[in-house]
Image (cartoon, helix red, strand yellow):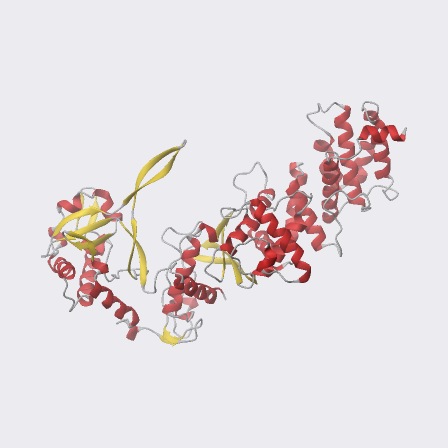
Amino acid sequence: MLIKALCEYYDILAKAGKVLQAGYSNVKIHYLVCLTHDGQIAEIINYQKKEEIAAGKGKLKEKWVPQDMMMPQRTEKTGIESNFIEHRPAYLFGLNWAEEGLTAEDRTGKAKKSHEAFVEKNMTYLEGIDTPVVNAYRAFIQNWKPEKETQNSQLLKLGKDFAKSNFIFCLSGYPDLLLQEDRLVKERWETEKEHPSGDADKRISQCAVGGVVEPIARIHNKIKGVYGGLATGSVLIGFNNASEGSYGLEQSYNSNISESAMKKYTEALNYLLSDSKHKVLLDDMTVVFWAMNENESNEALISAMLFGQTDKMDVSQVEKMLESVMQAAPTGKITKDRLGIPVSINPDVDFYMVGFKPNSSRLAVKFIYRRRFADVLYHIARHQADMKITDNMRPVSFFRIRNELISPKSKAENVNPATLTKLFEAVLYGTNYPVSLLDTVVRRVKTDIDMNMVRTGIIKACINRNYAKKEELNVALNKDNDNQAYVCGRLFAVLEKLQQEASGNALNRTIKDAYFAAAMSNPAMVFPKLLKLAQNHMNKVKRPVFFDKLISEIVGKVQEEFPKALSLQNQGRFAVGYYQQHQNFYEKIDVTIEEEEREEQ
């Protein structure tokens, strides 16, 4: 599914002119080599451009940055294999940079072999082409002797940059007429890429992706941009071990993916990974997402709703969309008109989300999800509604959820990738949240002694979706909820508030710091002691009637005695009850507490 989807997305991108044509590569070019008519190096010009980058403390510094050039498809194979119109220094010049300067000698002889491969391939490809720049390039190839050019002044002035730079060629005096852009050179390459001279040696079979009979890719191009992957790129499909061979087929011949399909899916995936509008990083997992159209409004909306990235949409737009989607959800008709905002979003296209992690020199696919975009919108809206713990709560991003699953004191702790994977599935498909999500949040609450809006929202969402036949926990405080764990949570919040007011809010440590975790696990062990302490606090507060009445009301909901032990779900209910009761103390009410007391008296 993934490879086919990427191939289809490549066709969409190619039609929109967003990716390279098949048969070409983007190469970062550092220097332009100007050749005389007889193939001598007249000069080497710096082809990089200056860009300003941040240097810290609000300062900027200039840096030379190589320019991207479209050149004939470069090889991704290991070993020695030259390109048509080569750009790598070892192939072009047959020289290495050593501490003492340029040398044609090395232990393995790789520079010599690389240069010989370059000469052979490019002389064959250029045969019969008669243009000034090609003739100069051909003369350069024929006349260049690496062992005699170790003191070449033009190369020596590059210094250490020589070994890590890429080069292009032109005829001296005509820097705008580049070799790879010569009309006859381009025509020769177009013919070659359509009918490769090496096809006779390749395996011809039916492509597992497109179904056509054509050459099968033996080695797949590398994927770059995955966090933690190799700088040179990693492969998504590859077979390197003898045990992976089958019926005499080695390497990627086993995958039966054609050369054309391989180039399409790798180009499309590299495009997604190079664009922040299609990629996010969660811990050490790289997540890419795309809709099957050329317009990026769908992706912008998902970025805002799921990841809080609002480069193209502000928060109010996202909230308005969520509201519109929720209103449309009961009818099952989520259309462009229903979204309520004039943006170019197609609700009927397919939407994909894929998670990657590096594994040695390969990429591991952690999850692949595909849904109709309208369904994705509905389920995200449902997820945000499940997370809502107050009426004015804004959409919660995955990053906020992820941050609440780790200790605030930890800088290196990561969330279990399986938990994140199942969480994505729950959001996109509307399935149950992972059990580990509730377990992790409850553990963090007890360990950190910290309840906040997001943690409470996670617990509420997990309980309502996973364990309740109907909505059990409301957005705000529910005084009619008689669940014993919820009642205990409310009571704890009231007792804490009583203690704080009795001390004039001057305490550095309250009953929450001492007893909260124990009360969540074993209310029967803690609450008798807390209620006894409450009687001592009652004489010190300005509103004893209010607290006495509230405590009596809540204790009256306790069935005979406090629970001896609370399950994981009930510990979650305890936490929600505590948070909602705690927040209720700070909500604006029409009648003040003092007025209520006067009416009662």
